[in-house]
Length: 577
Image (tube, rainbow, N blue to C red):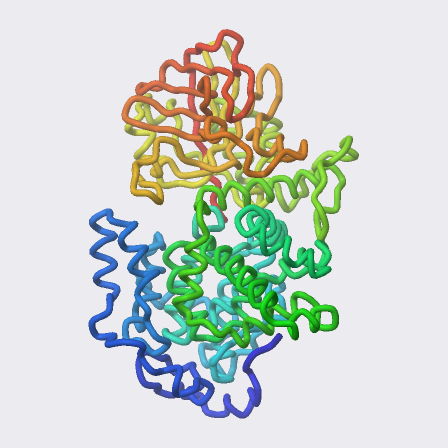
């Protein structure tokens, strides 16, 4: 579905960006926005602005800030949105200075010029060209959008599939210039753990499958109602493959911008909530409208939902209220189900399963092949040589074995030594200073008895200072991608038990809390793995440690006697070169 972009060549004949009334940028074709959609729903001068939200964030009152964003009914033309989106994205970015030098320098490097008319823009392969959603952009704005995307592709070569990136970029360009839109998208692309945008086909599939799984648990009545109307489960799953387009391609722009307010602040969990709310509201409408029931066989479920969204009868605020009103639907559960599903899909591919398309996911049978690491997914020869010279824990063979266990997207990056007790000393304080902001990291330990083992730590150690969604300090943090391993004398990987249980057809959300204790840190120690034992524990001076069987990884002690004395500890980051 291509929205906008008509008479493109005509509109680009003048290389001057028009001026539109605030908060809209010059990339918007104002004739495509009905006047009634610009009417404010209240006295917006008294509504919350970014400065109010920023003050709460700086005071550590994240929950209050979140609710302000959810509940403030900014209209499509609200003055607050002129800088709201840019500043929220800046808050997420490690680069607080949204300067323009890098963007224009890269544009010139790619195209030889910065003049829009002279840039022959080609979209990267990770964009689904069926869904070039440009909303109310002018044809000139569409070209600017595609140029921003081309710079994103140039700067982030690890992205292999990000169909929603086009629609997100076009929405940002409604309220900001090209440079700010690029910097905002770069912040979202670099967000931790794909918090904002899926960037591979597996991650994309994991999200739609997770939406089905979560829907069957939290709005199961909607699924059973459709079954009573004769809609087969396969058709429901086919429809959910397109859930992101219910939002970005079908809903009116008035609804989409309010959803984006919350999405930019909270992440992709907002979109999953909205998708379930749409599905719930659609089924509710079907039960009260015989015509909708009658049209289901001919129109199909997905097209029926798209039509429902295009003609939605409730306000943006009512849609948000419905989405956030789904009970007992937490961020941690969403993250857990998405991660479990993604890891399961990866295991299907490793075991020879297809792992794509609609249909039930089945546990893989006897493995038919081992995962092979392509040359494109290996550390560069420079990285290997550097590690061979510097490392006191890993041989090249061991590094490549460890590499084969990493999440696929991380094999696009290169290992860099951040911390070693040989050079930086044995201190937990120094460890945090050098390591805590990096994500993910590899922790490698060599004992005085020449045992080598460690952990892949999926989350930055600085998360120990963060609060959860309820405002409580996090005792444990991390995700199900975390794993333990041994290299000497035996080679073994101990993945999260949630993945193993899913492979055995267990309920996705059946893992008990004691088996979700991935990472812990305080001023006395760090721990990886918990639940009736500590997978790896290191004391504050990094001289002694302990390893035990723990529920999170169901591992044996990684050294025979459990207690060990450290010879050297090394920590590697994975950096996009």
